[in-house]
Length: 96
Image (tube, rainbow, N blue to C red; front, side, top):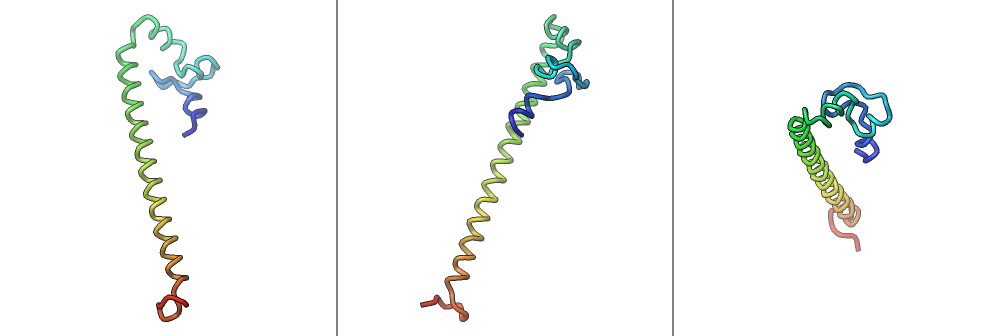
């Protein structure tokens, strides 16, 4: 996921309502929740949700990195097999 996509969520991170106003989209929090947040009414829930979201994203990033590493290793094995295949003659002996 690109950083631009992460920063332009179209739904409130607290209540999930659709956001249409540019300022709300930029902060990813709607005006009602923003007011509640500023008054301290949703701090604990917001912080817990933020931590859970960050943990989930970290886990997704790690899973993506692991999958990419496995794919790279598989490509390297396939390339090595291809090199070995073309380096041998019809009888399976190395060509001279």
